[in-house]
Image (tube, rainbow, N blue to C red):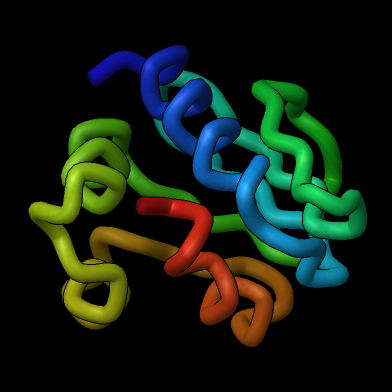
Length: 98
């Protein structure tokens, strides 16, 4: 999957969800995906903005996470996923990712 394909998939999933009151940025070596959870439904873009929570991963690991091949908790515990900011926000994201 490319960054654009993942962004499109996340936009599709987010369009069916309610706001969650925070912003999140997924920062990869191939670009960023920004989720504005203050909007209803949440808005997904590739804008590189400040966020309440930033999740940093290599793109290949991020693609595996989105594709369901990598569990978020496993990625975090093994150091493949790093969280900066409000970790509670990261916990709310499962439904938007898949």
